[in-house]
Image (cartoon, rainbow, N blue to C red; front, side, top):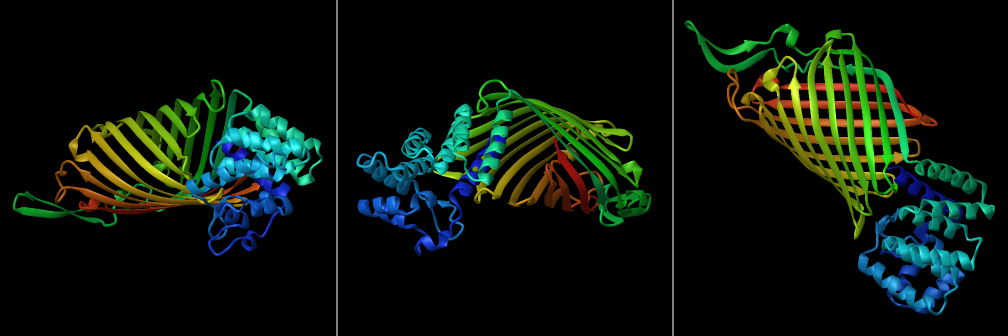
Length: 479
């Protein structure tokens, strides 16, 4: 993850070195730049003119479409342009603009070896080419050559670049120093106010229809809910902390050992509903060219009030894959197997299994959309609590400067194996779960965060019909 932020930072540096441009004026109705048009029509004379007499090389991103031009060109178009430029390099081997363009195009084609070679030639022909030096550092980071990236950053610094570029490069070098360490540790803490209008998950109504039962001469078709079981509205304070550790067993892009420890506790006005969670995990991660794998063995305990609620022990795995032909698409697979042992509800003990597939579409560097499906099965000791569920999930995230926004919606249907004794018919629950989060960085690595969650559960057994709204407002800090 840290490598991703560094690469994003280098891209910002590149823009700072080159200056900003009004790209809209350089594109036709099809979203093509003059250089793209010349390349697609194999007009070699026009390509050479554009590269040698204009700044086209340093504004060309090999994307097309309406603003902000983030849709990559097709693989066929990229291959065609690459073939033409490579033919031209035989005639103009020392033209820095041509070599720079080949380097940027090769990055788009994920040909990092050719990109590195072309950008090095650009610097050899023009040693004070700050933009080429920054892009070469970016290529070295993408290929895991952190020492080479450091060397190219220092080369740009030796050329006395603008002050803002110098400042940002020094920040990137500091990040590279941290990445060079085998052992990494980070801490996040949160504290704030929490409000929950149904902390005990009470039903929406105080009269529940039931399967008819007869006592003497009286038949009962409904029962009243005890007042203590109706929804409890309360608020209070919370704290949370997460410690994450990583030990790289070799290259930062290879195998590593991960561990984390999570803690959460709330103190509510209705203190019998205070919650405490403690969870730890130990696992392995592996970063490859097109994927990231992580597997964790994790265990935890949840308390309500002063009493233990449930102990868990499980295995969680996740794999993220990116596609060469569509680098902005990510396929994310996750799976969980967890044993649950309730302290006072032995009938709910059992094994929970879930698998989820998500497709994420990056919209530039600052926003993303996602959609996925989740299948789950909770195999409990008593079949009335055993269910199979299917969920559909959509989400979106965006960042504007110091502000980061996230929202998601999940629809779930759970079918239970056996009818409860008092249930009027077989139980089926459907649930909508909405989440929203806004995080604003204030000073350094500290900020304020607001979270809102809404749950609406509908069941064929009205005892499980409920709505719940939870709000959290707090301060956070990373160290």
